[in-house]
Image: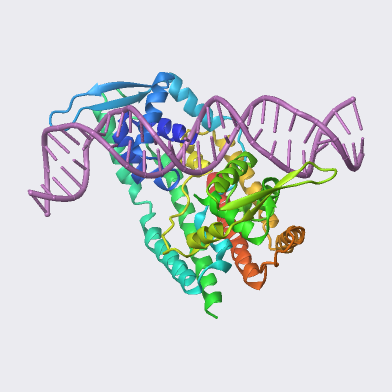
Length: 193
Length: 193
DNA sequence: AGGGCCATGTAACCTGTTACATGATTGA
DNA sequence: TCAATCATGTAACAGGTTACATGGCCCT
């Protein structure tokens, strides 16, 4: 049910096409939640039949026409409802193929295992610096521009509040990336004793 | 594709019924990978048609009959193949509803948000001590007992190697739990300024 | 008497992935 | 000239969730 809320949440900032929702995903919540384009199109079609969003075709001279979706009042209520319903407890996500391989690693060729750990470490080391708050202005920009294109819409508040929470999510990735790096190095060290 | 390998991996230690695979999940890889009973039954049926496991009905006087699955040679090859194929890079799992809510928390009632963070902290504090290596002997026991029931099977090696990697996975949960706790407390502190 | 455990499954549904199809514009 | 970007989708498949069905045993 969460792709739905991610989409509604982004549309609350600005009317967007399916394609540009995907773009916004890529520079924002992509680390938190991913979706393929085909899935986004499907979800948007569904949301429209349920009356949570409405769409309008927009001609663009050179580039292909696009279908811009706007959040309806009903859609906004659904989104806020999701955010403000009585808080549920969320366990940590539980699907990690890499860890599953470690669990069964007694059957793994030792050299291969070490290489896999080294690759894993490398992956985090390259991935970690990509997670930084630097993308927040970029995101703010895109949303502001999308809003200008929408006539008669008062700019929504992408302000200090937003920036704070986006910073929170970035911080979480940094901390868990650090912890994971530490762990992987520890494992490798023990294997190399 | 990973539920499949989790099942094959457990069956490599001992022949098990669908129901007891679920039990073993619960005290072992449940933090790494979860599955519903119905999914396990479906997967086992599929694995049997593919010849990776074979089954045998076992009468039990008082309790209902059970269908015990054994790994075939082909199944074992498939499992080892998965472990030893050229290492792929795994990104971190990317579906975290809680973080998604934080991302959009600017729209959240502040009291509710604080309560949600507090619940989250509490959840980790209660969850963290449950993740400890103490379950390893229990797991070893269950597998050993299942093996005794299987006639003519030489006990597989649930030994020091196994214990090491299980310890590794436990350690990872502790480290990331610690990092997540730190993060959540940080967020709450900033909100309470 | 009622709930929980043991033990099996089926069916419908929802969500995510992969592959295919189309076609103009832009930059190297 | 070739690949990437913009822009829309459909179809098939794979994997995960929820609900339903059955029935005996054991414990309180």
